[in-house]
Amino acid sequence: MKIGPLQINLRRLSVFISIGIFLVLVMNFNVRLEELARLQGQAATVRAQATAIMVTQAALETQVAIATSPASAEEYARNQARMAQPGDKVFIVLPAPGSTPQPTPIATPILTDMTKWDVWMILILGK
Image 1 (cartoon, rainbow, N blue to C red):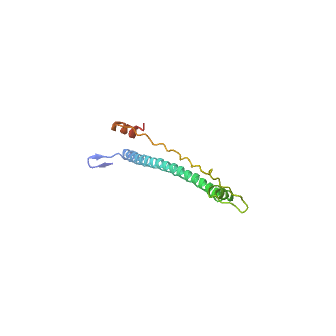
Image 2 (image 1 turned 90 degrees about the vertical axis):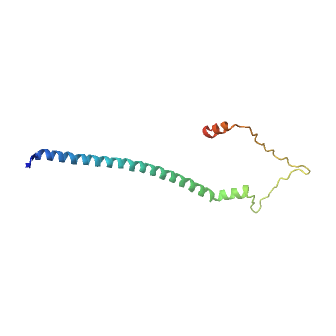
Image 3 (image 1 turned 60 degrees about the vertical axis):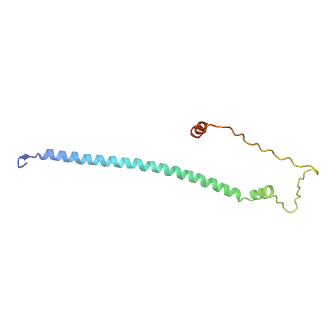
């Protein structure tokens, strides 16, 4: 085929057009593969979060079951709330007459003089 001074070979033109279409398809395929990898990463993250939430839910359901059990309520009432059932004999231990309870000494922390350099080293390195 001849257009003015240019001679165009239809076979070469069709090869170049098919190569161009092939390159466009390969680039589109590459973009889709990148999108697939990104979405698979997000799916793995969501699966991990869902697993963590399900483990937390199971732990909370266990705590609710323990807290609402009659044995747990009775243990709390007797040990911490100091309650008694009818017919129980309650004993209260009193100190010996004339004795004074000894206070528990609280150790005061000893402050050491630190340079600014030491403070920065502790903040940065945790030593």
